Image 1 (spheres, rainbow, N blue to C red):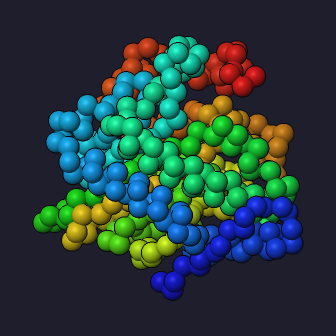
Image 2 (image 1 turned 120 degrees about the vertical axis):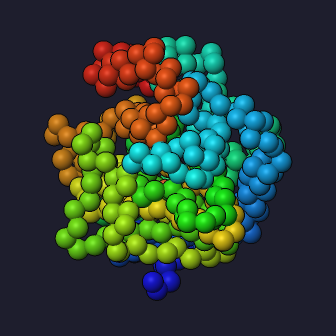
Length: 350
Ligand SMILES: O=C(O)CCC(=O)C(=O)O
Ligand SMILES: [Fe+2]
């Protein structure tokens, strides 16, 4: 593939003509390649390095038994051992630390048994602080990119970001082992769930994305009978994402596909193992857990995504045997979700 397009974000997004033009270019890059790159500065690179260093320390310095203690039955945040995650029913080989919103035990949403809400089981304060700084940096970029994209589509700057106030942003910190023998599966083909996926990878390589292909029907991953997991896994049409220093990559997730009526597609991607171990961090810029998302061009129709439901469904699908999933089922926490959706339960944000 030709090199990915690389953009520089402005200090602030004001709605200027330059912002509108940049927004159009971001959209064009996603429509052509499925992914684009944002150039980073020295301060951003230092935050990325600090998070990568924390990741290496955690994955390398602790035994499997030690790492496996950082799990919670309230939230999907925490450690996921190699082979524990499934995509389309097949095990993935990455080991992962997932960071979700750190919701204290005395928060009313935890007390009221909302699924997926609870404190992050952090390994230690140093790890926590490095990850928080890195996520805050990508969060700022995510807000700007969403504003630029909204302007590029001719909408108000806040057409997307009005959904991301107190967004359910989360991150997967990943380590891929070295390929051994015939096994080269890292993570099976999938799309991610929210607005944007912003990611930093080391120099090893292993990520492939599927750009839009004229006439190819893409699954609507939020519908119960249209999973993107495993889709196109063995087909032609994937492009290798060459690791490039001083950038992070950005592509759209399911909610952006839904919001734009498919003018942006949620980019399918998959990871193959390499001849060296690989470290990467994928940050997900998301709507509020309670957001009821409607397509921009059909704001009054019946077609909606309740984001918290989509998130919960997807994590239950990926981790069918995790304690978190079992507790959701045993305590019938899905009822809380359906009450939030129907408005019969008082939502936190009113
Ligand atoms: O390893 C990567 O570069 C991407 C990981 C990924 O797709 C994910 O964590 O959802
Ligand atoms: Fe992904």
